[in-house]
Image 1 (cartoon, rainbow, N blue to C red):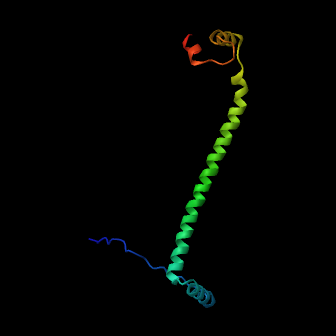
Image 2: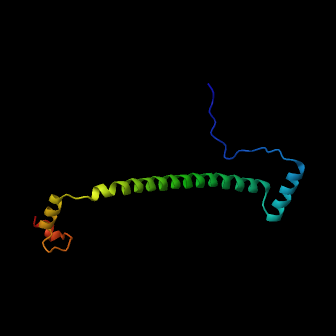
Length: 111
């Protein structure tokens, strides 16, 4: 039976570079006071974080587009929803005792 080993605490990654690129990279690491491994880990972490930010930005744009579409549909439907019939107006005027065009909770409760 095959034995399953737990994952290692860390993994290695082999990268092949032209000599000039490696020399320049190592010089840059010395200038910044970090090891090549630290620089590569930071790069990988920032790339992974950048992808997560990009996904979040995409979700934000999708949400905004859905909201704009909803507002556009609502704006198109609003005029037909705002139309009232004579019977509706008469019922409202009956409730609006002081005739100010607004119903207070007390006026509505008296119905």
